[in-house]
Structure formats: structure tokens, C-alpha cells
Image (cartoon, rainbow, N blue to C red; front, side, top):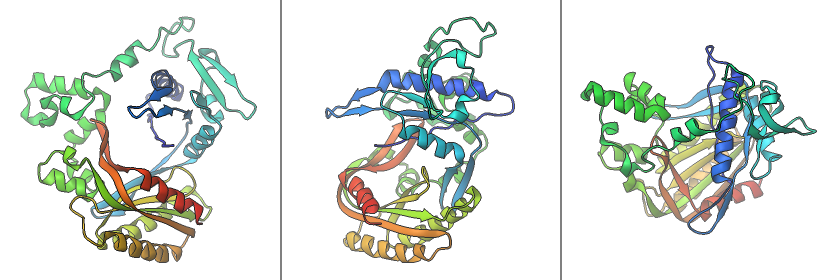
Length: 351
């Protein structure tokens, strides 16, 4: 299955218990809406949700225009562990997260391993009256039901810089972007050039050509490299150093071979990197051969990297869906298809 890692930041002006409550409410809404969701192709999707809390390390990696980031820390590992013991339709908290909650506020079950399944909210910790029953998710549901859910439905004023808008339109734009306030901060601080470093090159090419990103959406013949590295046990800052070195080496080899590093994943203890050959603007006749040669070079280079215990790479070629996916205010470029899954299985099988 696929996994999403969502983060809520708690600052000095807020209580962690209130943040965790918001996360629990969000998780329950997701379960209510998508606990069992049947897709257009009659595939039933089921959701498991795990919640943890604590301090994380957010670390940019890479150099030049080939930047990415990783998020590491004990809460990530605890969330992964909680997800592994979670069943479809559940919202499960780690013992660490539950320690910050008021148990009376929730209909819950405490398990023998310390994890807690939350079934519903009884009282809202934000209320001054601690005995006032929770009134439901009205405000939160209203917040997620915006008048647009696809790129075509985004109001035109969201595409215009705030400096070119009237005061009234600026207020309206700020209200529409209430779901993702960081977009406003990015515009106000003029950090567009910095964000470019974190975009893959086919997307940048479309942006610079003033072409809709939807033009990148297509079924396409590509070659996939799925790379996994097993790092040596050590503290999290040391792990970040290993990831950074591995990522830079991989990017250098891949881009010399006309490939693209699409993702780096550090959700568990291993490091996984997804590389794609044959994307728009990076197509060439011998891409399958280039992918194999690239895989050999990467394995040879990363195997000798300090802190790396093992390297495994799966290589496949075939048709995939390529395109920009996600909510209009939070999107990413990805590749989806059987050959991506096969590359991942090969990577895991032959280690």
C-alpha cells in the first residue's frame, strides 16, 4: 500500500495536547470519509491511520538545483510501528502521543502494547467548559470542502501575485488559501527561487515554458530504478549525513545519464530512492540501457560509501502513469504503475 506522512507543527504559543486533538479529529474525518473507498476501477481502498508526537529533524539534502528533504526522528519510527499493528478503519495513537491527551475526552481502547485506538471524540479540550459535549466536525468539514478540488476550478486570482491585486481581492485570496498558509508566506518572503531547487527538472521545464503542468500528465514508456540503502545504526544526525551523501552521489550519476531522481523516502530505517528514465524532455532511444548502466554505477558508488551496509536496486521498463497529483494547493509529480511496484519488489527480493 501507499503511505502519507502528514505533519502538524506545534509552536511555543500552543499546547501539544490541542495539536494532537486536531490531528485526531482530522484522522476521524478521514476514516469517516474514506475508511472504505471504491475507486472508478472497482478497487477498494482502505485506510489505516497512526498518530505519534515528539521532536523531529527536518533536513534539506542535496546541492545546487538538485535539492530534496528528509524528515527523521523517533516519532516517525513510532508512527510506522503503530501503523503496522493498526487494522483498516482504525485511528491508533502511540503511547507517547497518548501521554499528552486527556483520556476522558475520547472514546478509546488501550491495548496491551500501550497503543490506543480512538473511536470518537467526547469532549473538546479547547472548550472552557470541560463538561460540554463535543458538537461534531462541522467547522473542520466545512474547512476541507472548498469550492474547488481540481486545477481547472481554481479561481484566477490565486494565479496572480498579491502585489498586483486590489486590497479586496487580496483578502479574498488569503481566505481561499486558508488551507495552506505557507503558500502566502512563500509569496510574501519571495522564496520562489529557493523552492525551485526542490522541483524535478521536467516540472521546472514546464514552468519556465509557461505551460500548464497538466501537459506532463500522460501514459509513458519509462525505465524505473528503485534503490534501497541499509544504513549503519547510529544517531539521527549521522543518518542525515549518510542520506545526504547518498543522494548527492545518486543525483550526479543519474543526471549524467539523462534520468531524473523523483523521490527519496526515509519512512523506515532504510533509505529508498526512486529514479525515472524517459520523462518528457529527457527521452532518448537507449534509456533502458542507460538505466541498467546507471544502476550498476550507483550500486558500485554507494556500496563504498561510509555508513552504508547494503545497496539493492530493482530495474524495470514499461508503461506508467506520469503526472502531477494531489490537491491544487499541495501537489507533486509522480509515476504510478505495475512496473514501479515490480521494481520495488525486485529491490526488496534480491538483497
